[in-house]
Length: 276
Length: 338
Image 1 (cartoon, chains in turn green, orange):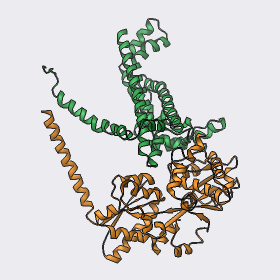
Image 2 (tube, one colour):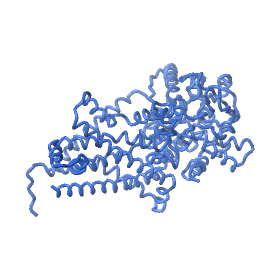
Image 3 (cartoon, one colour):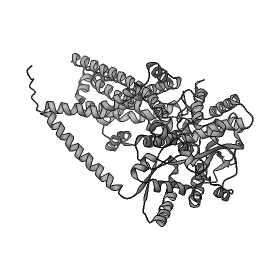
Image 4 (tube, helix red, strand yellow):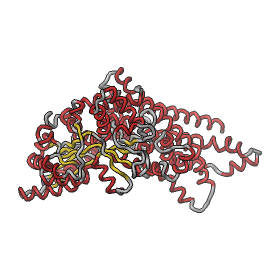
């Protein structure tokens, strides 16, 4: 077989490094979880991962992550739009603020959010008379997951919006499109792939989040326990196998969801390309 | 070709790694002990360690250093099982030391018999903290299951503190003439009054004291003294229930580690020092109940004499209590899933 010539040199070595690096950093630790789980029979595995408390935690973790990512998709797009299309005093400052959830230790975020949303906190004190409790309820979990996911959407959508010239919108307007049509027919198709990526990143980040959620959730079994807490709880009881069994389920669900989102993105990209 | 350079990279990496090990070994040149301990014993050991170092220097002329590692108890125990070279381990529950025998045979099975008082130099107990003036009029365990009383207890699944509170409530029912069924009903009712299950004792303190959640906090006596010292004695009141659990803090030296590092004599002396007069005084200063009788008698004014039961006495053993109550599907899980 003839060796295919590549114009760029160093393909073999860089691919070798990539595979080695990915194996050491990602694949080996992940496969350890699967190997550990193999210590128990499938019936035992199934019993552990379908226990009522565990199932309730999947619903909360994936449900709250989804809602958080959806909120971020809408308001992240809006934030990115404002940062790209307008100039206003303090814009650089606002731009920097967006990255804060990236940099802040999640435990700090959790404690700060709890302090603000507890019934004696700044916001919680206003919400309590209305009968809305955020801290120590599933609502608190959504708030925390929205907080940590924001930069993912803004930072993926922002460069695409910057590339999108204002002239295209002006052209659409001059050809008689109203504002809604300009948004749905011109802007949205262009940013859609980036928005999906941002959504997927925010969603994936939220599923794995532990530090910030644990302070605000209240951690009541069946109500506000996230799956990462179930894993930690099992480890606290020296139940390594049980912990990895739940971890494996999370891994598989997350992988399938990310694969689905990637597929959707590929499909959106192709359709978008065909339109032009 | 590229394989060769990968190997070369590996060699470089191993040289770097090896030099790290040399550096860390050099740091161990003078005799040192590593004490792996639970989360909230920091302040206690900050006082105890310098006292022991001085004592050991005066006695043998040898200068030693003591390193501390603190964290959630089972996390700490897991690190030792997984190879953290701890000379001594000091915990707030014996199961977190038993695991060293069960998982890695680092210590003998009967480690508790090697020191006085089942190897527990100090203890605490679960008591109540209420808001100033005791607005809900909490006097004993029975008042905690009344409607409209919110009780803050750390999660018994993740916290030794929470386990002790749970077992104290269970033991209260049995000791006042109830049977297992009554105890289960009581504990179920109690936990229905718990609005937040924090991961650990310190988290529960924050929830109660800073977030203003709940009417009663159940936690260790030493934690309650500390809250009053740090956050003001005028905001809260301590309520001593009629009976509670004795939460013993056991200590052990890790045989496999001390034999390898040749630190058995120092580690043994360090543990003995916990039981000495100075050691017991330092414990009392940090609101831990001294367990050596002569010392305990000196501090009856600090520590209210209480009817206290041991876990072993009511539940047979810690292992049994764990299995029945806290294991997955156990009584505690049933409170929430049934």
